[in-house]
Length: 164
Image (tube, rainbow, N blue to C red; front, side, top):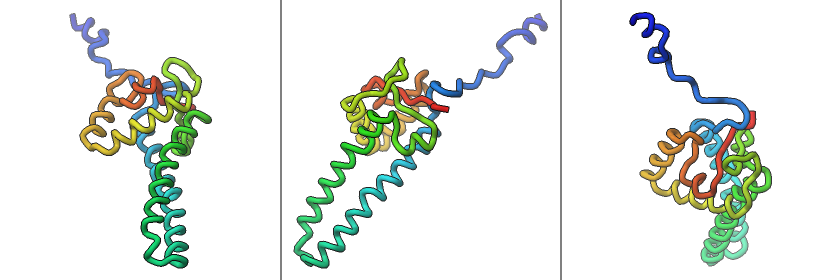
């Protein structure tokens, strides 16, 4: 009986999650990639808007507030609809994912997802980011899912995998 306990798998620690190329990306790698993308997004969105605000104030004065708001909204919408979806469908990753060695692929294959799926994935992810309770649920879902998929990945039939 004692020999069965010693030799049995009951006493062995759980095996670590798989690592290496084409394996599901971990939650921390994904979060660091998101952080890098957020810093880049703030710079890309805010720097031109601040420059435009200075130019507008110098030429029009305070009367340009409505124009500034319109340009700011258009610039933000353009960024949201282009950066992540185009980077994801074209190269399979954003700058943050590239730095972290991650890639977005179709679930069950190594191929990139198209713009439509990338747009759905990104818009749902932005929506998730607006509600703290849903962020927590999504992080838990990613951590517990065999493919490490969040809600946005499930809707887009995509997965985030390691490239190295």
